[in-house]
Length: 67
Image 1: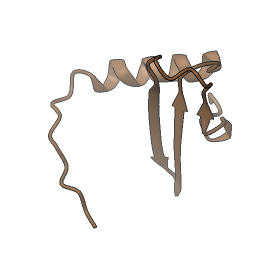
Image 2 (image 1 turned 180 degrees about the horizontal axis):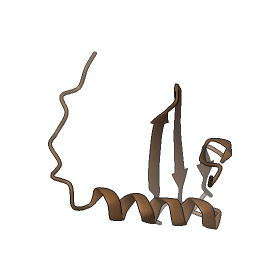
Image 3 (image 1 turned 30 degrees about the vertical axis):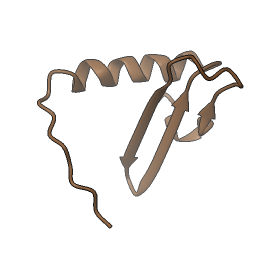
């Protein structure tokens, strides 16, 4: 509904001392990663904030790197 898979892969600039948000979604045979640092559309920001509220309470465990 937010058009995540149609978003740019990167919203960035030459400024490197700002925090960035990275969101990756794998669903329905698609795999999309969006990096947002500057100029992110409100849809990305809202979606990222919603994902954080859903995922933050979950216990996290490291996943071994697979070659």
